Length: 483
Image (cartoon, rainbow, N blue to C red):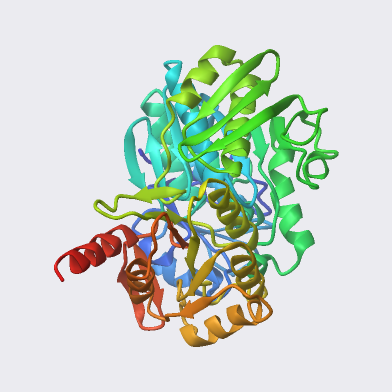
């Protein structure tokens, strides 16, 4: 970007003091990235407060600092909330790229990733150029950029929007996480359509209460023209209540939805149903599982609201591809069982995937799973109970233990399994757990590797290691074949 005047960057921010209108070369909230001419935004985080280094940043070369109180500095801009101000500051620095894009934001506990990919594929099928922001990867058309968070920080987010606008994208489809909404990462951003998938327990380690989690999600619908919401979920109508946007509903069980799925059929190669909207059409979605009905129905509803032709929607869904780490089948040539990787890491996510696999399984469903460390501990016994109640066999192992002792996390999981008759095996090392499941597989088993999904790493108390479950499966197969 070219240099900008500070006054231009602050055009959409309420400033509480007079300031010197200097030239700005970059904006950042990361003290490690401050260079000569930077505008440094002081944000208070859980463990570090940017205000504590404001003076040092000026000494380092920053042209000015943005803060929440008078720090007695000669080059400071005072605002009420620096976290909320950072998003419009970044937007102005990148010349407000969202004015050139139609934004579609998805929020909810489960289904966001697959649904965003489906919407992108539907729009592209009609010749549109589309950007995507989400958990697995960010995309500008077909160009892929790595994803560090479900919803990036404002600087990275606005930079991606600028790349999309410059590349001629008409739409951007993005996952909007509850933490991003709570932290103001999308402050000042306006969405053409906001969509809601569902709401179940997740991220309570961050939000602390269910109400905080719900209210964070609800923020999206105050910032959109049109809402598309799942009214089979008990929060589907509540989340769009009093938001002032136009509301369209979708459902499988509710007969009064604007878009409904009827006569649903499940198979190992996908789902089929009648989509009842402005017209009636047959949907053939090549991604198996009950949640694929909801994901494809949500995508079809959003596309319809955007004015995409009904027949084009049906054609695009039929041609759609799966997403890495979402009910992903790992090739296991020469075996008589199936290995599936899925990102399910919440109680509801685990219940959805196991239930879906039970509908198509000819043999047992063997679930290999763990729970993340330094996260909501109340999920652990719940996930243990769900896995035991729904699976035919469980292998309890480690996920991303982070700073916690893996064995202690497993103990919490086993509390939920103690009253179940489902047999299980504890194998703490995840590589060894996958190996155990594969070596004890029976004909027609489905081995579900739950929790890691698209991730290619594991966060241990000793640090982060490379860990790709596809590679582990291949290695185990090689070892078995060489014996």
